[in-house]
Amino acid sequence: MGAAATDPLDWALAERVARRVAGREPLAASYLAESLRDDFRVLTAEAERLVAEHTGLVPPTPARAVVVDRASWVSANVRSMRRLLAPLTERVGERMAASRAAPIGRRVAGTETGVLLGYLAQRVLGQYDLLVLDDDDADADAVYYVGGNILSLEKRFAFRPRDFRLWIAIHECTHRAQFTGVPWLKPYYLSLVDASLSSIDPDPRRLVQALTRAAEEMRAGRNPLDDGGLVALLASEEQRGALAAVQSLMSLLEGHGNRVMNTLGRTHVSGQARMARVLQARRKSTGAVAAFHKLVGLESKMRQYEVGEAFVEAVELEAGPRAIDAAWRGPEWLPSSAELHDPPTWLERVGA
Image (cartoon, rainbow, N blue to C red):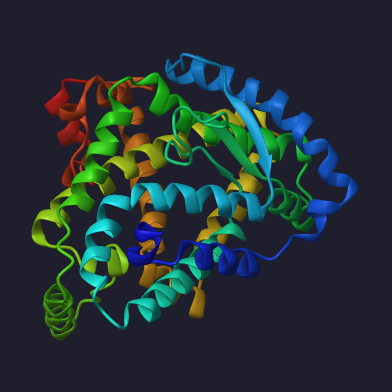
C-alpha cells in the first residue's frame, strides 16, 4: 500500500484508459482470426531460419510466437513500463508523498500514459521487446503479434495473408536475433536505459530550466521538440548523452531490421514492394497526428528507421552484405550519431 500511495503514476488508471482508447478491432473476433496462431507459429520459425541464414545471427533458442489482442498488448507494456521506470518513479514518489496535490498528479500522469499506450495499441503490428516480461516469466522472450491490427491491414490493402505475416515475422525475428544472437547487446542496452533514468533529478526546477531551453530554441528558429519530444526536452546534459547513445543504437537496430525485412522480402514475399510503401506512408502522419508524434517523441523514433536503414544500405553497398557484422563485435564498434550520417567514416574506423 505504501508503494502504491507514493507512486507518481496511477498505473491501474493508465491501463484502463489505454484499453478504452485502443478499442477493439472487429476483425479480431471474426473467423479470420482463427488462422493467426497457427500461421504465426509456422511463419515465425521460417522467418527465424531466413534471418539466421542472411545475417549470421543465431539465437540460442527457437523463437515462440504469441498472438495477442490490443488489450493484452496494453497489459504487457504497462508491466514493462512500470518495471522499467521503477527507479525513477520511486524517487519522484518520495518527493510527492507529502504533497496534497499528489493524488491529482497521479491521475493526470496515469491518464496521459494511458492515452499514449492506447494510441500505440491501435497501430503496432508486431513486437519483440526484451523488456515486456521478466526473464523468468513463462512468456519472456516471445515474439508478439497484434492480431486485429494485422487483419485490418490485410483486409484494407488486400495483402495476401501468408506473405504479409511472413514479412512482419522477418522484422520481429531480426530484432530477436540482434538481442539474443549478440551476447553483449542486451546488457549494454539495459545499461544505457538505466543511465538515462538513474540520472534524472525529480526537482521541479528542472522543468523551469527545460522551458527556458525551449524558449531559447524557439527564438533561434528551431522546434524544441524535434529531437525526441518532451523526454529529450526535460533531460539534463548527462541524460542527453545517454539518450543520444540509446537513439544511435536503436537507429542501427531498427534500420538493420528494416533492411533485412525488405531484402528477404524481395525474394520470399509476394507483394513486398507495395507492403513497404503502405507501411512507409503509415509512418508519415500529417496534421494533429503528426503534432502528437512530435510531442511524445514518436517522430524521432520514426526517423530512426530512415536514418538507420540508409546507413546499413550504404555500408552494404560500399563493403558488402556482411560488413555490418563489425557493429556486433562490441559497444565500441557501434556507429556514433555522426557516423550514422557518414557511413564511410565508420567503415574506415572499424576496418570493414
